[in-house]
Image (cartoon, rainbow, N blue to C red; front, top):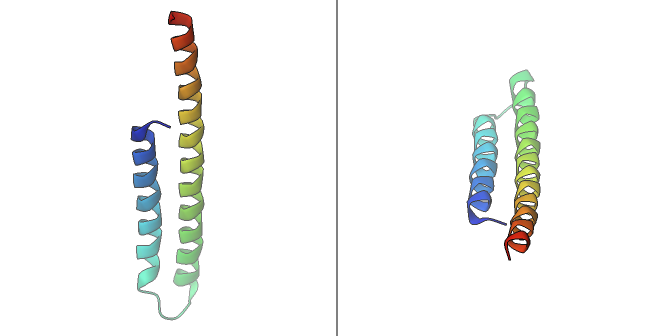
Length: 74
């Protein structure tokens, strides 16, 4: 996979996880807001996983296309 896509994946995933974690840091008692924060945190984590999967697939597709272009030009 291209280094740029790995870096982008890492940055996006960490940003999403960090954002979700920060939401939950100040919660001592679990009231409605804290429950919502947990749901948001889980959603952010899932979104990060989906972004990572999508960038992996995109990288694989680009590698295949690169191979086809290389084969066609040689």
